[in-house]
Length: 147
Image (cartoon, rainbow, N blue to C red; front, side, top):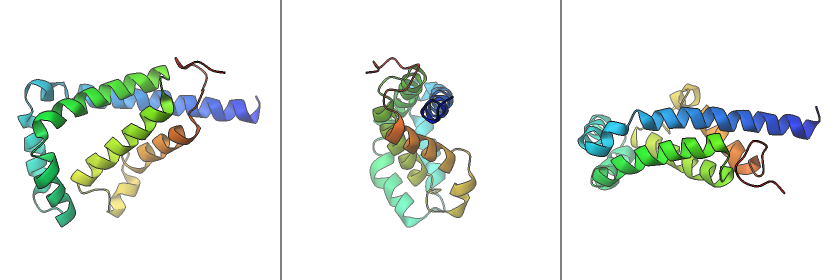
């Protein structure tokens, strides 16, 4: 197997694995669509004893927008998962999903702690999305046409 084919195989594997992960992360949030108070409850819990940056973010951005964000998170994660599984706009999807993950970790106050480096939904996920955002163009097994 050539080096290029090997790298593509690795990126396709990461793309599909992250897609499945995100699809099910989103699917778990299906109740948020009809009951956004579930997100508000989580945000209230996260705002207790958190850093001033995360507390400000939750109080001024996340909680006031919880009605909209509850639905956006569900649809965003499910659709991002499906797009990654199918290889549809991989680089764009990976970039947007990377920003979504950063947003969630900022609100949860895990982004600026050393424990972020060892969390399975932290650095490994961000690293995978960065790899796809950089090298995910025209991968095999993609719905997007290869040239």
